[in-house]
Length: 362
Image 1 (cartoon, rainbow, N blue to C red):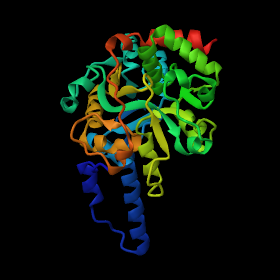
Image 2: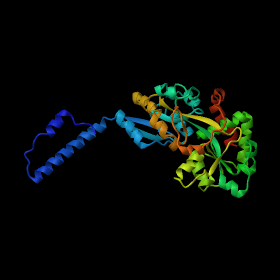
Image 3: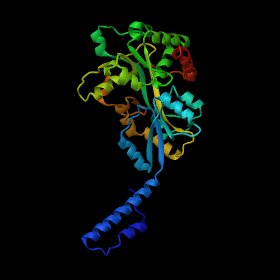
Image 4: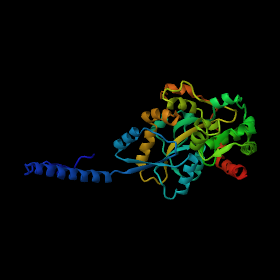
């Protein structure tokens, strides 16, 4: 609570003529009312910083409260859906931005955001601690890295006595496609990442043929990660024992079991051409009403406390060097993949449009 103005403090400290219990009670009521007015006036002077994120965003509320206190600001968080959906909303509202800051756009979506003129450049001083190869450039500061990968339900395959598929070609067959759920490249950043991985492996035409065949043979395509993993994955009562998620998901399963699990119930299925290195970032939206506070929030997202909090909440790797990971991360794996080339990423939107036409609508 902000301190009362000096003249009010002086007035409040004047001795009162009331000496009986009733008078004492009246004095307390007057003081309480006065302080309430002061508090309300103070709250009206606090600016609001609006931050839009994808639905998977999770950060310790105490950290956000600390940022608010340190910067005399109120942070308003907006859930924008999956990353692809969030980007669509930002493009549609760019004439009158609905937020000051965006978190959750990644290296697959950045070219589209740049083409739409959504972001204003800002390079955080903390970016110096991010390895050069992981920096997204002046429009987005890399907050975290992760590996999009196929996961499978160990118990399901053990009980069924079914061997795991060994290639994308095998995954698209009816025997495995009907067991697989993935996210849409048009609305989901993991879906877009997986699609680009197949394009890099099979070529544009080969990838489209693969997706059409897999869908025809029973592969399910959902709008976003939450539905695919938390509803359709057999580990949570769904009917699909293969799901598109992250290579860190097995570690998350052990962590959330709170000691009940000593080994991960899911495993990674690193088929050639199926995994993708994803870089997620935070940036300032063009037209932000709070540009100075927005820059401070970008710095905050790359700060030590936030970087240390992310791994066991978002299940991604911190972008800055020197952050120690919890022991449970031993259950996560890293596929042998490198960053997608700029030539592929620059075509991401055109490739997605082609996927909608040639796969989704057929």
